[in-house]
Image 1 (cartoon, rainbow, N blue to C red):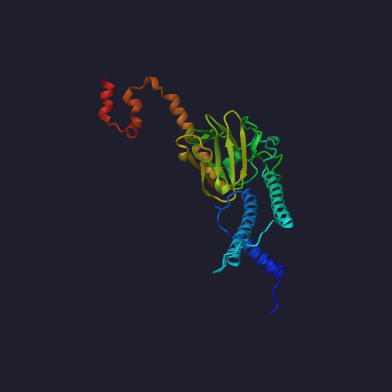
Image 2: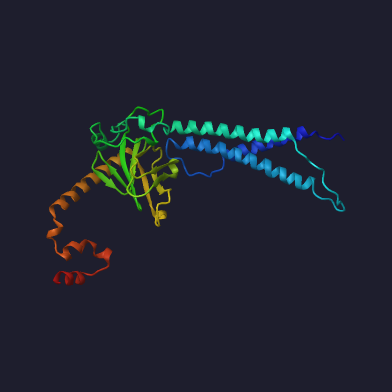
Length: 324
């Protein structure tokens, strides 16, 4: 019986490895859902890297298993193995192939980063906000070209080629501090501990930090950007799926780093308009109350009354403090 040539076995093995790695690379389900326009770019790059990694794993581990079986020590055979001094063509091959893969992945990664607006974020005029979608009356009334001045960062993920040269639909100033995120909507007079954005809107985040370096990360958006003290940075994205997604600090920033979390809530345009209007009214009322009541004119019990539950003290204790 004629022996099958090694080259044919190699071809068959290559086809099998290629099919398996391509299928696993496109059907791994390792990533969270995609919730931004930038997410498919990152996922496409990840899928290619994972496909290559699976192929290399199968080749290396498969070769090890074949060699373990083929070159195992037979019973009664105590001789030395065949001396191998090297194979120059093989060494060139297994050096050239990884080098080509690394170079191609490097070029691809730069292209993805450029499509996401990471190379020149500071060259786009993002200092003001206006509305690009027609739905929602409150958003249209409040997000206009008469916005307050905003920082124009030069570092971060800026406008993509489809939005380059356009002002963002919504600008939010994000401040990181130990151990919380604060979100300020400068054109609307609203501040919050959560990020609220309308689906489909081009959103620009101006990131800053008050103390140490923090890192703003939304896994479902596939976006992460450092917030650096004294150095303004930028993150610009378009959310594509309504829902609530976690915001995580991805830079070790102190003892309670693990609890530095918030969430981004992606609304429909109508829901965002309603949230914005409600918070504008509520914060204006709080401001008027704060101006009307001078803390210096309050007694100890009156000043502490709203916080009795948090402090764990009773009304009698407050009364006693007032008497003293």
